[in-house]
Image 1 (cartoon, rainbow, N blue to C red):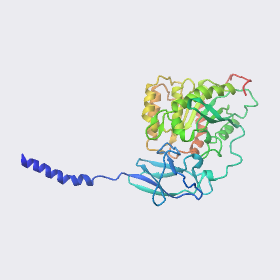
Image 2 (cartoon, rainbow, N blue to C red):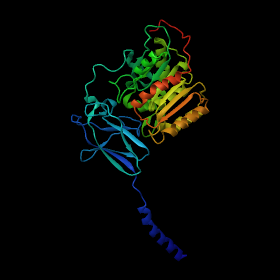
Image 3 (cartoon, rainbow, N blue to C red):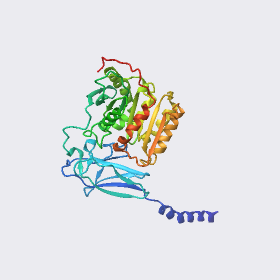
Image 4 (cartoon, rainbow, N blue to C red):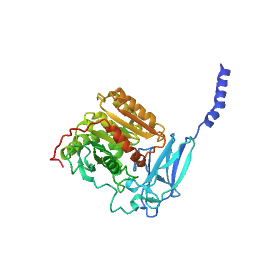
Length: 399
């Protein structure tokens, strides 16, 4: 017995070093900013926003090291990392040397530690504000400070009216779209605009019936909170339900009362990208009696995927009238295709038909406005292709 115990003790001593040697350094990507633009405020905090943090411009601060470099380490994942540097808002996002728009920076996870050195050339707010934006003449600011009682705040609301709105008496379908800053005007967009107005104006000249678009500005640093129905312990969220209550109980009734709309669910859509696609999907389920068309561009389902899928499974909503258009880049993230597929299958288990489901994964698709701009026309036409606008109810008293 004593010999056996001795043998065991020797075995432990022999194998312990081997166990220690087998410990591996965690793979990761360290982002390092070596130089920032002249004129950057002395006490400015440099942030990084990307597909690893829901593109929140003010949630992930970089640390300044003893050499004056700004650093942040992104935990190892898979696929492509996309990111940009900011000073806390999209109004102060990095730009090229002439304060022009920059494409997303990218890096690829390799399974090995990496350090990427960068220089920031300029900031968006260093450029002079254009005297005239790019919005078409039939785009208006409905309100600079529309009351949002559910969130105890106010919000800028845009409205696009079809070219024949002022000369006719038709009633129109309505698209409710998130991230209003990025829909119509280059002067307010943080990384390029969707050109929703130019696209719909062109389609109108080609015979399209026309639609009203309501663009709701995001809340800046509160964007994740308002577009995410449940809390993510790392990134926040949890006010998405209140945000959707605002759209359904406050904003839509106002729009229907003041403009010539077709208020029935078959004529109303929720459309958004990234977290905007997440809240559109959630809103389409919860308010299936109000909206029947969902445009989900590069949906960020990952941030609360478990909760969303559980919500769909437990929902009593009848989704047989829902029509949903999914579009994303197949390589935007390692989980994007699987995340969309999981949501799609659960929606179909609740009544969504295959005929009313469209899924497009593009190998060239990127998580940015330029990509979504190019996909908007096809999504709009598909969502409404089987909708009849005949016998529109006329209410001339509305504007």
